[in-house]
Length: 312
Ligand code: GDP
Image (cartoon, rainbow, N blue to C red; front, side, top):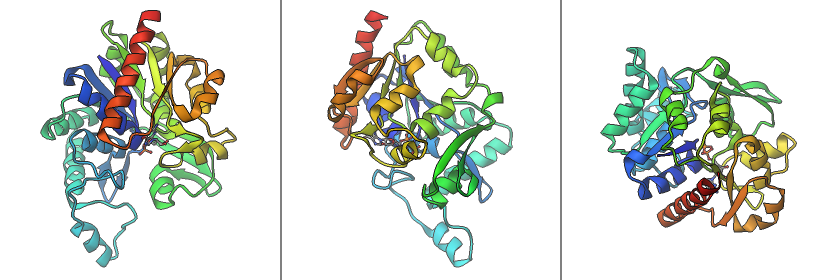
């Protein structure tokens, strides 16, 4: 069994690579839910949706969110009626949010709804929200505290970030299947996908018990850097680092995971950083453009984990 910790776009790319080289029952993808929010009366889980759309082949790879086979009548009509349109919801995507919202209101857990939707979308690996409890990422900026999607989508990540908080995390319970898998002697590796550390991975680590379980876990913990040559492939990871007074580099990400990391995969372009990283470093091509890139990086990560297992 392999556990992959994932946010949205970057995480989903590697999760897809892993899903193509592992039998479905051997992969569990644990997904950040700090980005979740309620909008137009709907319960929206952006990272879970990015992962499930990616694993089912439905994702829109150009924009990095939503479905590729989308139509936009709902949004166009909203616009003509003066409704809120800053968060783009395609017609097919809306259907998923409506189904999830109704089921959550009827008392089902987010993980139960996600498991059923995955089955209906033909996804083999288990996709599990980090928790079934409510956790909401908020950011302190020059405009005060902002809700995550207000910062990320509405204000296009423009505000300067001073501090982050994961509301509800301190009293949340990690998903029991996630904790059980971490303690399972059959666990082969935990892969921290190349996701934004501040808004995708650290919300998962902020849930009581998760960080300690990762440190204690017998299997190697191995991360892939989301930073290549000092830059994020997409999104505000490098911008946030600079704003938080950190050097935007692969090494900075490794330092944030330092207590739990056994292995770290960085790009060939970042070779000079090897000396500053306190984990076994593997150099690879970490830019995932094609499907072959995703599979190759997934193989590199699993091979590196196998070497670490023999050492641990
Ligand atoms: P979000 O929740 O949609 O922001 O997605 P994530 O947090 O999962 O992913 C954002 C991070 O993924 C950014 O820091 C990107 O640099 C990183 N990323 C995206 N594509 C790639 C890629 O092909 N390779 C690597 N190494 N990182 C990537």
